[in-house]
Length: 321
Image (cartoon, rainbow, N blue to C red; front, side, top):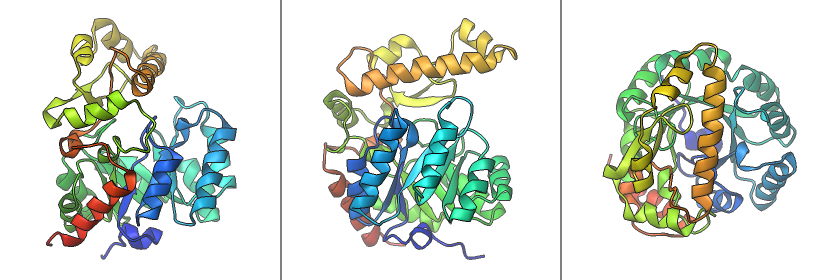
């Protein structure tokens, strides 16, 4: 069966979504992406209030008619979920990317409005579930993704999902160059969700220290930590991360594995961890916890968002099949 590619599905020039990145994605980055032939998404949680979320969506819509999306955390760790969903439905965003929970309600409410729903998955079992629920596409989060990564390498995961599912598979993780995009498309992916190479763009509002770290560190410096969000998170192995350690200590392990305490422990760890990540992202601090994926290897300078997109798409056009 020939599966529709992301560019055809969304009506864009290239099969790329600039990934929604917690604390990093903003309206300036989305606009630059839309101007240069790709789509982009941002996390709803990047905006503290409903008013700010609405303003961001309206700002992008007034700038461009090109499709963009919003990432929604759909489990209990996001107390704003219900309100955020209603806002996205009312303002008719083009697509929603669901993470960390069941997308059933999102799919049921989006379908009558023509809003597409793409679901983050890390394995075949969950991919089959969201397909049965009526998802429009799968975001295949692989072992080379930044942030919350999966455990299966990109090509293996794409092959597994495309051979067993009948909806488009969008690969997430490890894409840094046009050749990488061409290769994953040739493996059967409908498109790619790409994040790390855009972190150090001029338009992002993170600290200069974070941006410079994206240039100074490489793939060998990316580690996974269990200490920040209740789930493995990929970060740059700064001296502070080395001091903190990447494995849960005994107390954290007990809390995470006790049935009664597990839910509350995860919420507390996630809250504290994300507050630490937020502080490090926007200010100079010795407590440097900076999220990134292995594609950091290819970040060589701080550049305008549009230039990074153009380099990627030009390389893609020039890449041999």
